Image (tube, rainbow, N blue to C red; front, side, top):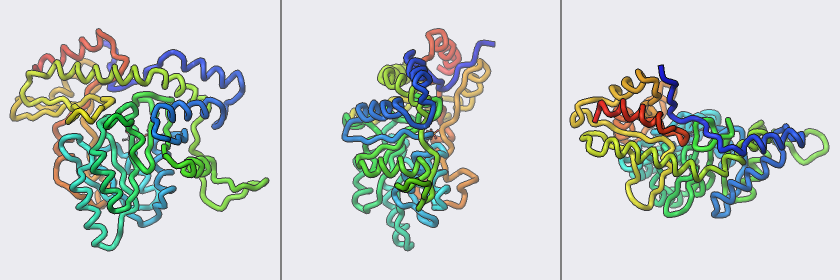
Length: 376
Ligand SMILES: *Cc1c(COP(=O)(O)O)cnc(C)c1O
């Protein structure tokens, strides 16, 4: 059988090992050191807009700290996009808080502003004002930023921007990762750049950065001995991993171009196929990194299902996956309130993520094209 083609695999640029080797040579084999400082600076330069970045052990850790910094406590409610990976919602549960899920709208597949506002009004009328909003740029596609930000401001509920999948995306020429009161990034192995595992918290407030570092390093008070007035965490990124990140920052823009080429590759394949749509930007103000290229299949028009494509690819050792199963349909969140209709649910039923790596070779693309050709 031909070697496996992955959905999204790590893609090294070439200079990563040099930075890792520097860490060894200088003995900065620790969760602090010069690679971490330089990686944070590189991200701050990339994101612009006065961003302050804290490198952490994962995107999940960054979300957890964001909730703590915004004062989310036991019994509080947090609004969260339903159409996402579970890591967006799990940290709400870490805090003993209650997720309130919101449906997507059909154009960006992200949080629907209408249902968000409906949820806020209803929760307030039931006696509890939600403490935060977690909105996600799913698969790299920016959410409806102007509308979501203005609802967040109108009701004075802080916005956490889950930009784990969207480093390199932008909206009206500003980078995703700069729109939240607090934003988060992920550098997991399958993301557009990776540190093997890692994440970051982004804010425009230096005090938030300081607070995040304090909490991520066990919340030590300023004292000569070990003194703690608050519960701390061990969430800092390793200086070794930050070295990988430094190398990856040099190729981030190339990765965006290559991932966008994959999206075009699928648009070309499916351009004349009735009932199959490739997920692309609704208008010119959106710029997606197309972290994953996705399609939706309308069986009535196409005569085949997305699972038929999934099986055909699997037979040829090519990985594809259904879209994220919405959080309000997950057994673990079955008791959580939900606002919306069936947009996310329908996407889940009809959608498929296709191989989208920036490192796919010509012959791998040919293999994919041959399988998809059966459906054209
Ligand atoms: C990957 C991901 C995360 C979590 O990031 P980790 O670094 O894997 O902890 C959070 N949200 C979304 C939408 C993700 O895709």
